[in-house]
Image (cartoon, rainbow, N blue to C red; front, side, top):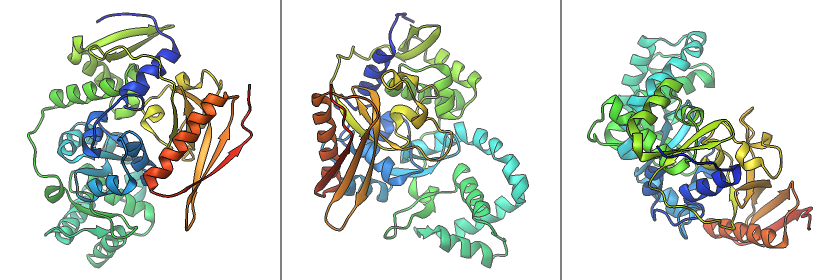
Length: 370
C-alpha cells in the first residue's frame, strides 16, 4: 500500500469525485447503485434524488421506472434500515450482512414475542400470498397474517415480521400501487445469480465501498456495512494492493489505488437526508471544516435534514414543498458564502426542479455575503 498525508478538504474532494457528484458516472440507476454498492433509502423520495442528481439529466419518473421494473430493489440489507440495491446483488449481500442484522434484532424479537416458529409461519403466508407475480401492500399482507391466525398487534410487530422476511430473502420491494409501497417475492423479483462464498462477498463489498467512498477508515466501512471491525479489517486485507493507504493526523484511510487524482472542482449540491456522501461514514467531521459543526448530519435521531454542500463542505440546510404548480425550495445558510457559491447553489436548485419536471420557486434566507 502507498502512503501520503492529506487534509479533510482533500478527503471531501476525492469523495465527491468517487461518488459521481463532480465526475461523470453511470447513465442508469441500476449501474449507479451497483457502483455505490447500496444507497440508504428509508426516505424514499430522498433516495431517488440521491440517484437522480448523480445521473445526467435524469428525472424522478425515470428513476422510479427502474425501481418499479425491479432492476433496483428497496429492502432491508446492511445495517437494519432500507437500502436500494441492484437486483443481481441482493442475494450475496443478504448472505453476508443479514445474519449480523438479525442478531442485532433479537432483543426486540423477544420483547415482541417473535421466535423462529412465528417467522416460519409468516414466511409461508407471504410466499403463498405473493406467488404468481402478485405485489401486495403491507396492509394487504397484514390481513393475510391475521386471517391465518398470526396476531399482528402493533405496527412494530408487523414491521419486524416484514423485515425478517426481507433479511431471509423471502420478500423485497414490488412495484408501487399509486403512492403505496408493495412487496414481492425475491425468487420472482431477483432471479438466482451466481453465488459468492463469504470471503468473495466480503471482498466485493469492500472493493465497492472504498472504490466509491474512499478515502474512508475501517470504522467508516464497519458502520456503513453493519459488519464487525474484524470483518472490515479482513476485507481490507483481502483487497490488498488494490487499495492505497493515506494518513490524516493519527488516522488511517483507504481508497482505490487506481483512482486518478481529482482536481479541485468548484461545486454545489442539494443533498437529500441520508445521502451517501455523509451517511456512508461514521466520522463526518470532514464536511464540517468550514462550519465547525457536523451535528446536523449525525444520526442522533431520525431527523436528519436535507443539506447544502458547497465545494464539499456543509454550508446549510434546505427543504422542499410541492404545490399544484411548482416546487418551492427553501435555502437556509449557516455560514457565510460568496456570490459565486450562491449562484452555484441556485443552479443546484434548478437541477432539482428539472429532476421533478416542475417550475422552481426559490426562497433564500439570510444569505451572508463577504
